[in-house]
Image (tube, rainbow, N blue to C red; front, side, top):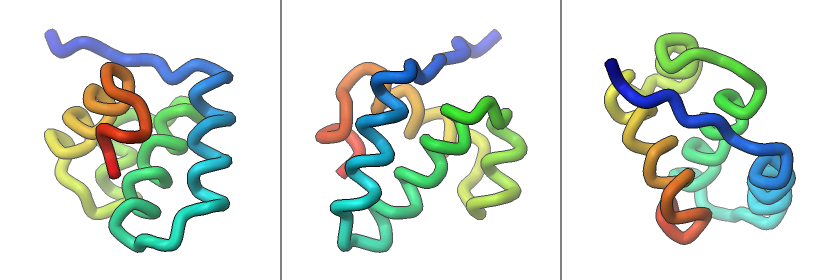
Length: 73
C-alpha cells in the first residue's frame, strides 16, 4: 500500500502564499493539486480535477512533503 502523506496547516499556509506570489502556470497547477490534497481530496479526485495522472499526483505530494516548495518549482 502506498504511503499517504498529509499536508499540515503550516504547509497549507505556505502553499497559499506561494500561489499568491507565483507567476508560472506549471507551478500554479502543482500548487493547486497540493492545496486540493491539503483540503482532503483523494489522489484520484485530484487527478480528475487537474488532469494529472494519479502517479504524478502521488509523486508531487511526496516531493513536496520531503523537499518543500523548492522540490516542486
